[in-house]
Image 1: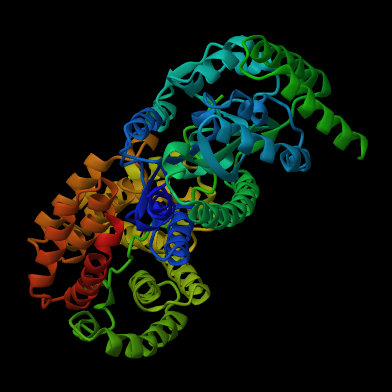
Image 2: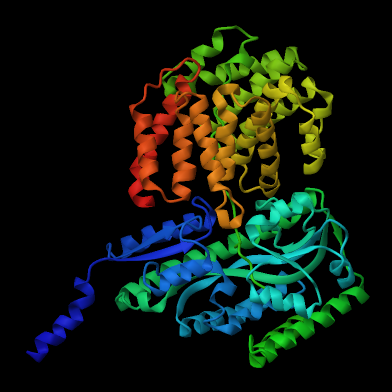
Amino acid sequence: MLRLATVLVALLPLVASATTLKISTLYPDGTTIVTGLKDAGKEIAEKTEGRVKLKVYPGGVMGDDRAVQRKIRIGQLHGQVAQGGAFASAYKDSQILNVPLAFNNYEEVDAVRAELDPVIQQGLEEGGWVSFGLIDGGFAYVMSEKPVQSLADLRDQKLWLPANDEGSAKAAKAFELSPIMLNIGSVLTSLQTGAVNAFAAPPVAALTLQWYSRVNYLTDMPLLYTFGTLGIHEKFFKRLSEEDQKVVRQVLESTFSKLDAESRQENLNAFQAVKQQGLEVVKPTPEQLAEWRDYAHRATAELVEEAEISQDMLDRLNGILAKQREGQ
Amino acid sequence: MQWRFLPGFVPSLFVAAAITLQGCSVASIDDNLPYGVLNNNDLALVADGLPTYLLMVDGLIENWPESESLLASGADLYGAYAGLFVEDPTRARKLSDKALGYAFRSACAHDSDYCDLRELSVPEFETLLEEAGKGDVPMLFTLGSAWAGYIQQHTSDWNAVAELGRVEATMERVVALDETYQYGQAHMYLGVLSSILPASLGGKPEQAKAHFEQAMALSEGKNLLAPVLYAEKYARLVFDRELHDSLLEEVLAADPDVHGLTLQNTYAQQQAEALLADADDYF
C-alpha cells in the first residue's frame, strides 16, 4: 500500500493537467520582446508535449507594476517582464547595476554583468523570483531644452522624474534636485507645454515616446544603467515537474540571452539616432564631471546606509571596475 | 532610480497598413484607369499587374518631374504596393523609400515651404502645419500616409521611429481641416497611432477608440479596413475579445464591392479572417 502511494505521488506531476504560466508585460504585442516570449512559449509547449504553456499579456493590459504584483500574489498571473526595480524588494542587491554614474561605457557594464548577472539571478530566485537572464536597457542620459553640463545647470531645469518611485525620489534628494514628479504617460504633454523641460532616459525611450522632439541637448554622460528581466514567481514555477522546469529554463535562458544582445544593439543605434534627430551633444568638463561623481558617491553611500544595497555588493562592483580600468 | 519602460522597445507592431490607393490623384493620367485597380476584388491579379502601372507612373514622372499630382500618384501607388503585396522586407523597405521620396517631392511641388521637411524640428514642422489650409489636405494626406508606410517598413531604424510624431501631427491637421477626406481615413491612421503604446506609457486608447469609430462613421461602414484595424490595434490592446470578434465578423459579412474601396476591402476581409483565426492564441 505504501509502495502504491509512493508510485502515485511520483506520478503526480505526470498526471497533473497542463500548466499555463501567465506573464504580463508593458511591451505591446508585436515588439521584439513579446514576439520572443511567444516563440519561446511555442518551443516550451512542444518540448514538454503540451504540459507547460506560456500565455503573454502584452501592452500593459493587466495594469501597472503594482497591479500586476497584486495579481501575482493571488495567482491570477504568474510572472512579469519589467524593469529591474520592480523586483528590487525581493533582492535589494539587484539594484547594484543601477548605481548612479557607476559605468563609463558598455565595456565596463559587460565586465560587471559577466560576473554579477549569475549572482543577481540567484539572489532573485532566493527572493522568490525565478528569472532567466537580464535584458540590456541602455544608459539613461540627461536630455534637456537648455544645455546641461554641470549639476548646477540641471538644478536650473524643470526636471521630470517618475512619480511614486522611491528610488528616483531618493536620487533627487541626494543630488539636491527639485524635480517635477509626474506619471510617465503625461511627460510628453508636459514637455510640450513647458511644465517640464528636462528628463533622464535611455534614448530608446526618448525616441519611442517622442520626448526627444521637445528638447535640444543631450548630456553625454551615462547617468545610470538600466535593465529589465522576466520574473516568474517560484510558487508557480515549482509546480512544474523538475524535468519541465529544466526545459523552461533552457528555452527562456537562450531567449533572454538573444534578447539581451538585440537590445544592446537597439540602444546603441538609438543613441546615434537621437543625435541624428538634431539633439546637440554636450559634455561636462573634467571639473564638472568630478562634481557629478562626488554627488553620485554620496548618493551611493546613502543607498548603502539605507540598506538598499549592501557594502559587500558595492565592493564587488568597484573591484570588478577597478580591474577592468586597470586593464585598459 | 527606476524606469517604467524597458529595452528593445521596437514598435514593430506598428502596421499602419498604408493602403490608400487614391483614385482622385491618379485621375490626371486617365479618369477611369485607376479604378481598374481600386475596384478589383482579385488581390493576386492586382499584385501581378500593378508593377507595370508603377513603371508607367515612373516614366510619366521622368517627363513631368515637378507634377504634383503625378508625384502624389507615385507616392500612393508605391506605398500601397509595398504595404499590400511585398513580403520581402528589403524590397518593401526600398519601395516605401521611393513612395516617401515621391511624397516629399509632391509636397515640395505643392508648396516650397514643404521642401526639406526633414530639416525642420518637430515644433517647426507643427508651426508649418498650422498654416495649412483646406487646399493642402490632399497633399498632407498623401504625405502622412507615405510617411506612415515608410515607418512601418523601417521599425528597426530609430530615425524612422522618431518620425512617428510628424505623421501624427500631419494626420491631426488633416482631420482638423477636412475629416471627411478619403472616407475619413485620417482618423483611421490616428487610431493606429494612438494605440501603439499602452496608456501607462502615454498611449491614448480612449482616443484611439474614438478615432476608429469616427473613421467607421465617416465611411458609413463602407471602409472595412477601419473596423479591422480597430479590432487589431484597439480591441487587442485593451483585451476586449467581444469587440474584437464582433467587429471582424461584421467585416466578413459585409459586401466588399464599394466604388474605389473594393481592393482595400478585399484585403481587409483577408486580414479579418487571419485575425479571427489567431484570436484564441492571443486572448
